[in-house]
Amino acid sequence: MAEAKPKTSPKSIKFLFGGLAGMGATVFVQPLDLVKNRMQLSGQGTKAREYKTSFHALFSILKNEGVGGIYTGLSAGLLRQATYTTTRLGIYTILFEKMTGADGRPPNFLLKALIGMTAGATGAFVGTPAEVALIRMTADGRLPADQRRGYSNVFNALARITREEGITTLWRGCIPTMARAVVVNAAQLASYSQSKQALLDSGYFGDDILCHFCASMISGLVTTAASMPVDIVKTRIQNMRMIDGKPEYKNGLEVLMRVIRAEGFFSLWKGFTPYYARLGPHTVLTFIFLEQMNRAYKTYVLDR
Image (tube, rainbow, N blue to C red; front, side, top):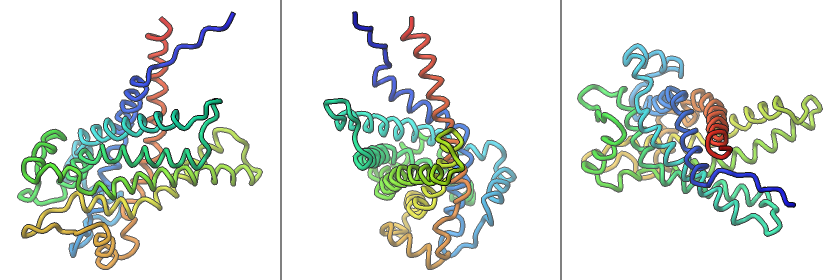
């Protein structure tokens, strides 16, 4: 007699838990996102740099805006996870299943990378309105009181942006946002597998959790270095204002050229420390939350 097939969670529950896990992790890493965004906007144009280092930025925000200040834009960060993570996970799962052979053989490495980049870019497009709101809300505290936008929460931000600047402004900077998602997915996949292989070949590591952790940290370093120039373009474009009816920047290339010319080549990596510090904990926390929700669902729903 054939064994009964074990019960599994429906796709909708998997997507829901993926989004919720990302949101749970965001609650813990939001201050790092805030510091990263402030660092990328520091010294914009001809202004002197407001913050010398990421730690200086963190202490300045705590001193001037209080403990609540480091959680500015949390509602936008949560909405970004709800839209971006859920869409990315959904698209990835659907494409992965479509590309799996009739004999159950999974797609090869290149196909997996392509699926990951496609899913990342689609998720980034869907998540761009929340990203625009997040950048503006986290940037507000650095401005003089009379120049602040003063959004009360993400929904207030989305409604006001639509009313004051038009609905298309919600997708301002969607090209660099999608480009960053593609770079992140490609860099993570390639650098993780290469790092893991190099560590195993060194003879000092076995295929265990320590090796996986070290490979993840190296992968995070490569991913951060590769994606930061695209990220600063995204941040500057999404935060820009109209000056005499004209946008501050015409396109992403102009942002890159102006940053290099006015602030120096290495300014493209401003906010490197909080960006890198955020990447690891966010991934680890997301998986911890995901495991706990899956376990609870299995115990209280599937096994009943």
